[in-house]
Length: 158
Image (tube, rainbow, N blue to C red; front, side, top):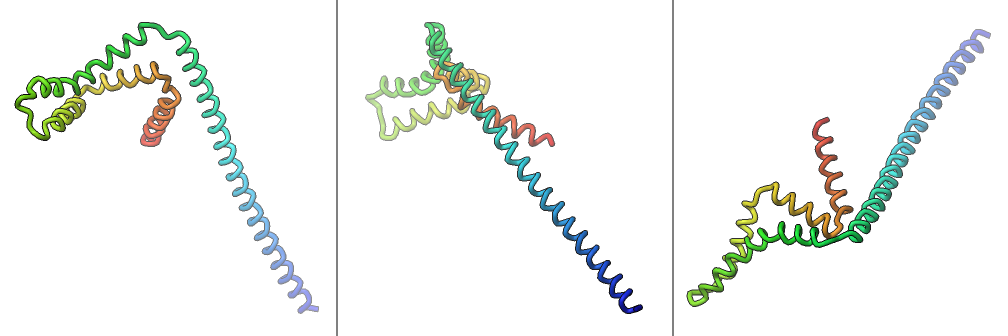
């Protein structure tokens, strides 16, 4: 009788421990499942926002193309001229001094343009980029670049 009572207590304790282990495993499984569903929902939300943003950018580009005028072309030429001059000036000098042309001078002239481009102020390059984005309708591309840069900035502040 005493042995039956002790066996019953041990059996009850083992069953309770086993039940708690099952409940913990179920809770862990439910937590993992909830986390997976949350990740899927976040990804779906990002995809929907990206698709909506791309559609809006495409619509904005199409609307912008319909209302193009001479001002846009003038702005493009005006902002692009300095870059062209950076590369053309050394080539023109080389052409004017062709009687003393040496092998490799053409490469040196082209590289002078790239060297000058490296010394160009950042504000000018940003302005040139914005004019190209607006003129040629690269808003969708620019949107991805801006989002990645913002992501880096936000990520670094944490």
